Image (cartoon, rainbow, N blue to C red):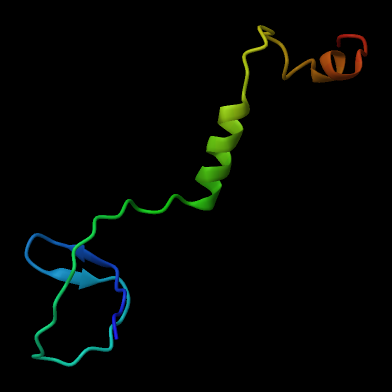
Amino acid sequence: MPKTVYAIFDGYNFIPETPVDLESNQRYLIQILTEKPPEKPEQNVLRRILGRAKDLGVSDLADQHDHYLYGTEKK
């Protein structure tokens, strides 16, 4: 039965990232597939937010957000 095991290659050996239940001194066929490391969820969220960001041409937006959002007087 096939098993999926993630491993890191150190230049000489494959080092499993998790414990493996394999017999010692047994011959195994290993299929090598390169995989990008998964993004951390918080990075993924930040990338989505960054993708929605727009330059509104307002230099004091952070300080005067109530004025631009609700129309209140500038502070």
